[in-house]
Structure formats: structure tokens, C-alpha cells
Length: 73
Length: 149
Image 1 (cartoon, rainbow over the protein chains, first blue to last red):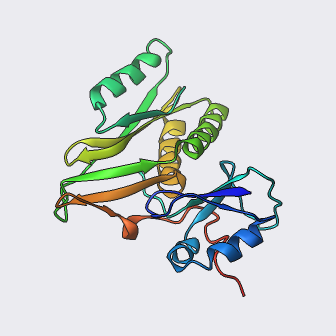
Image 2: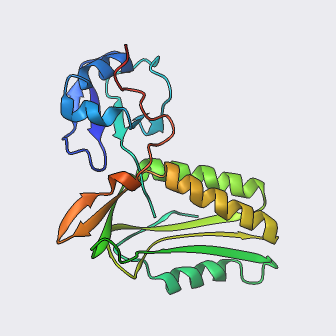
């Protein structure tokens, strides 16, 4: 199982998914319209490292963060 | 040095004076602070912030390394939670032996901060906390999980 956490303004509790890679995560999350609207503009981190490829394996216990558009300062 | 995160508005004078003390006697020619102050506009009484500290710390560590390679130091303080109008939510600073390096770095550092620091801003209007969506920027790499054909 991997944990998916939604940061900042995305109002959704952390979920757990039984998936093997980010492609599976994408197809699961896109089933929920309240989440899919955020995905186009959100960055993704695995265990607090921002990733730029879907071609990454996931292992049990990995933590995925969804980071919506930012505005510090 | 550490990233400084405070609950509520920043004590600007305390923070800047402490940072200045760090280079006292070092014979460094430049200390360039940027102090962000919450403006009263569009009926807001305050701004409010969420921070994801693990990734913000990594982002800041990378900037500390970039500054070090140019012989400089970067500093940063940011607020968490509500920050009323006319008070400060963000201070960045660069110190270096020479002016030119510091002027260039402060610009790059503050711009990259705006684009890639994992901090979310909300307007406080009539007691409600509203995500500042139109002023927010997708981080580098955004859209990875969006629907593909």
C-alpha cells in the first residue's frame, strides 16, 4: 500500500492505494472529479522528493504528496 | 543555518538585527534584505499560510548550497497561519563579500521562492479563509498525474 496525501487547499484526507507505479496512481485519482481538477496544476512528490516522470516503481509504504499551485510571501 | 518558520507575523527588527550580527566583523560588503509586508486590499484583514516543511527545507538547503558556491549566504523567515495587514509574512536576505553577487542572488532567490516553495496563501475576508488561487503558480513539473490520452 502507498499513502497519498493532498497538501494545501485540496480538501481531501490522506488515502491509501494498492498500486505498483504512478500510472496506477494517476488512473485511480482521475476517477474522483474533486481530485482530478487539481491534478493538471499539481506537482507530485514521492517521499518528499519532487518527481518528473511517471515511469517510477512504488514500494510498500511509499508516501506520495500532491502539491497544488503555490504562492509564498 | 536553519529555515525560520514562525506562527503569525514576523518580528522584522529582531530577525534582521540577528542576521546582521552574524556577519558583524566579517568584512562583508553587502547585506540585502527583502521584507514582504501584507497590504490592505480587496477587503482582506489578513493573509494566511500553509507550509509543507519537508520539501521547503530541501528547497532552502539547495539554495544555501548555490549561495555557498558563490561565496554568499541566503537567509529566510516565513509565517505560518494568519498574518494581519501591515505586518510581515516573509523575509529573505543575502549576505556576501561583494555587492553584485548579492543583488543577483536576491532576485533569483525571491523569484524561485515565488514559483517553487511549497507554501499556500489564503485571503482572510469577513473571517473566511479563501485560497488565493488566481495568484498561485503551479510548481515545476506540475500536471504529471493529469489525464492522458
